[in-house]
Image (cartoon, rainbow, N blue to C red; front, side):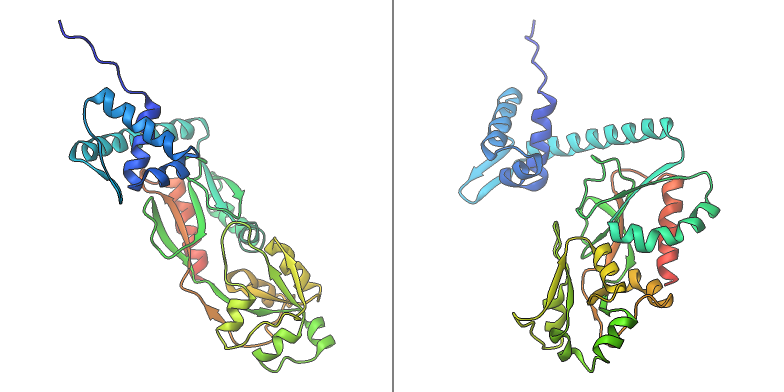
Length: 301
């Protein structure tokens, strides 16, 4: 009789899959929130249990073997099946619910003014909106769609163009009446500027924006700092200073007369906004309807 071999633990397989996908024990440790030695130890135990070398260790890093590559493909396939099953079960329990993750500013200034139109078109869809200023793991956080900045290189996600990141100065009419017309970009550092401090990802700031026109921000420039863009815009509306206006967010405020563009200059970055969704599963009809609606609304800007 052959002695039965024990099955490797699911945890060891998850650690291995992360290391294989990232091509690095260190990056796997960062992704999983454990130490690099813990990753190395889990992989060695798995190799011992399987009786096969999964990685070749060299001075310049680790390199997956043929056996390791085959196991990675099969584990990844199994995880996708599990993720699909979990999503389908969740769909069974909350039919027609779609979860969308956006920044607080996008929810406040872009989504909410349009939400009535979406509900009129799709009354059966229960839209669940999560506001966050950091990138989420869409599978882990149960998110169907998210709007995020990016270069278009999304390995794990399907993605669709939303809007370009176009930024220009905005302020209130009362601010112009108080300080007078703004002649050119060189005049901006002499005026109170409202600055957004990003907590999770870097965005174009006043220093970057002014640099595009060959203008430097002086140390003595008056800067008012906020960590929430909604507060930045509210401060601009109240005449406290000049804010950077992301076009897709501030155009309605300009149309309503709450803000004005004191200058015509604008900067379009190479980091557009994208709608993303997990690549591992096919979009449900409700999710597809929301995605298509978002794209159509953005196109109509």
